[in-house]
Amino acid sequence: MSSIYSLYIVNKSGGLIYQKDFADIARADTNEAMTLASIWHSLHTISAQLSPHTDSGGIELLEADTFNLHCYQSPTGTKFFMICAPRTMGMDSTLKNIYNLYADYVLKNPFYEMEMPIRCSQFDAKLIENVRGTPL
Amino acid sequence: MGWNSFYMFNRQGVCLCYQEWSRPKPAANAKDDQKMMFGLLFSLKAFVNKIDPSDDSKSAEGTFQSFRTDTCKFHYLESQSGIRMVLVTDPLAGDLRDTLKHIY
Figure 1: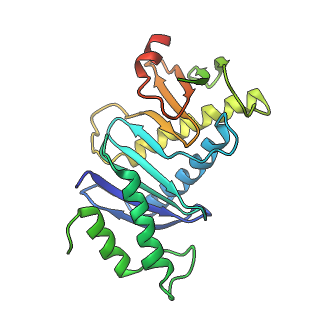
Figure 2: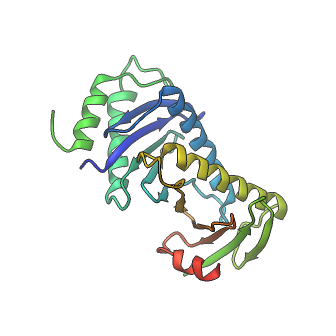
């Protein structure tokens, strides 16, 4: 299932709170990841404003030549977006699963502060298990 | 399949053509709406280049074909001369690249 390249989680102010690469990608540094996350946050908002319909959400799927970007925004404004290979199926349910893992292993962690970077080892472990498809 | 609107921009960002067929939420100001669309396209292209996981440094800069929200789908085509076209349709539309090429 290695068609999933990376996951980014962005808080409701546009700050990056979690980033993980599942494949071998040249990632410059965390600063670049943070910049990309906040750019995405703005693009997501603008696209909702440009929709010809009222009450539109932001971008859910972006199809590019070499990758697809799937985004899920929770009702509280937290955005989960994943970069994957083109034409990967089942990404909506993958994102929903990740949201459930976030709710269970991050939000229910009593030491986790809302909107802060995620540092929960159980979340990491469950995430890898979920994305790679095999238990560690 | 419902078509909502169509924008065509030149390389400088001037909106050469705007057609509207169905727009339940009218834009407050046409000029601002067009500028916002151009800005979104420009920024999306830059974003796609930066986040691209493939290390195709030799190929020309990658671009995107479409993006979709829950209410609409934006189809995008950019020519070699910098003409950018966006067709806004119903979110269930398939791949309309051939249509855009035909329009071009």
